Amino acid sequence: MTTSPPRPFEVVADLSSLPSGAIGARHLVWWGNIGFMVIEGTGFALAAAAYLYLMTQSAVWPPAGDALPGLLWSGIFTAALVLSTVPNLWVLCCARAKKAAAVRWGMAGLVLIGLVLMALRGAEFAHLGVRWDRDGYGSVLWLLLVLHTTHIVTEWAECAVQAVWLFTHEIGDDQFSDVEDNANYWSFVVLTWLPLYALIYWAPRAL
Image 1 (spheres, one colour):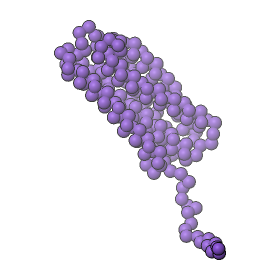
Image 2 (cartoon, helix red, strand yellow):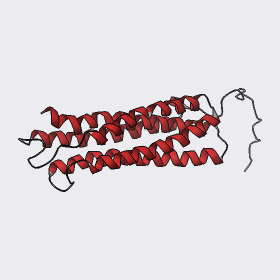
Image 3 (cartoon, helix red, strand yellow):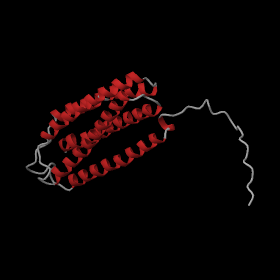
Image 4 (cartoon, helix red, strand yellow):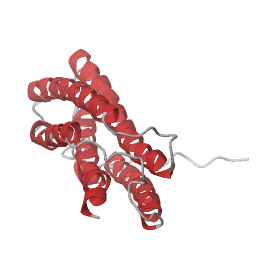
């Protein structure tokens, strides 16, 4: 059996000018992050639909004997969450501009902000005015709040891991892309809370 001689190498094009990485919509992980947001946003929508269904089936909402959820701590939390978009968007801009030092310290700041938000959310839980196992209202109320709190905790954990990595490793295009994805997800957590806040705290008062 004879073998054919190896084909000679041929230079087709010079690709040395192409970037070694990409951020934003040109990066595959960016689309994966969007997919996660769509899936999790659907989960929020289904939980909100369950709340609305129970509300339409009840003559009084909340049911008799259940207190309305407190507005003080929920309002403070919501204001703090909305204000957190300012440093988050700043970190996003720094990541797109590939400013390594600013990204490092910005992520560290977001970790601290996340701790404050979780403390405020704890106070919010303490003033809901109903146990999760009291009735359907209590269950769906806690479902909505726990669902959103889970996203806050996971986002904080992601910020913490990224902050440690950024301070202990060299930052390249992939790390800047990760920071951008994290910032986009933070914005998702903020935006999903606003309709939930209106549903939980103001819809019962509007009836």
